[in-house]
Length: 270
Ligand SMILES: Nc1ncnc2c1ncn2[C@@H]1O[C@H](COP(=O)(O)OP(=O)(O)OP(=O)(O)O)[C@@H](O)[C@H]1O
Image 1 (cartoon, rainbow, N blue to C red):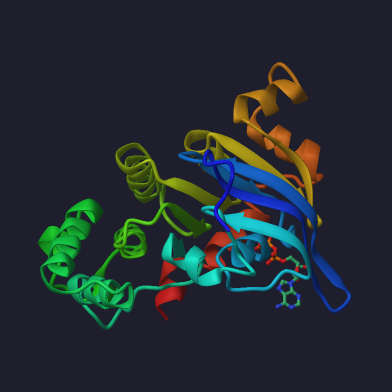
Image 2 (cartoon, rainbow, N blue to C red; image 1 turned 90 degrees about the horizontal axis):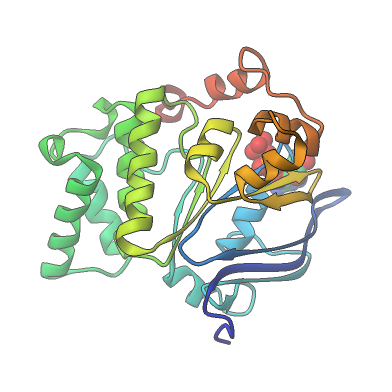
């Protein structure tokens, strides 16, 4: 089923997911325009990862409907998979392989071969800024280098839509910016639609054209960052918006910092 509205990249209608007695997602209805960088925000357990897993066809919804790139995720998962890239929260690059080997493996999985494979791997190394370390083992890379490699791996097949679960968690401020630059580059050069989940208010503010805040599986609010701030108050920043709509407070030295540490790159590499 092709989408009737070509300007919409992702749409959900009354999307719900229940795990036994837990309702992880509760009648989520939203749409993401093509070419947008869209942020899903919410406290722990709000349903962000569940949403991304349903949209990437990794998890089946309990009820409701979702289309990605014009295809129904439940009825046409293969069509959806052809058109998306996915960077999960946990490590997806192999530390025991070089950057080139990781990219070549992904390229083969995407069905690339021959000269096209070589060209795309070469382009991906340049895109990730890893040409000079192409033959080094990934376990010697910094967290930022690994994240850039993972983004390059997930976009080898030039997908229409890229999903990233917490793309910069555990990265220092400089490394975060290099990842943001790559994502902005993908949007500008290829018109790629990008959906990220994040806990990071600066990331949401700098990177996202539009945000949805989830709270206990429900959509609390959706809008452009500046419009959401204006809705809360004249001096409001995104942390105020987040607190207002989700009831959760951002504590840089507390809860969220704890998450970053426990899911940092060192731990991801084991
Ligand atoms: N496989 C599962 N089995 C049972 N419950 C689950 C499962 N996956 C998620 N949940 C529950 O669903 C709810 C939403 O979880 P989800 O991981 O989507 O939240 P999140 O917003 O991504 O949180 P975080 O920021 O911690 O990643 C939580 O209560 C979680 O415990």
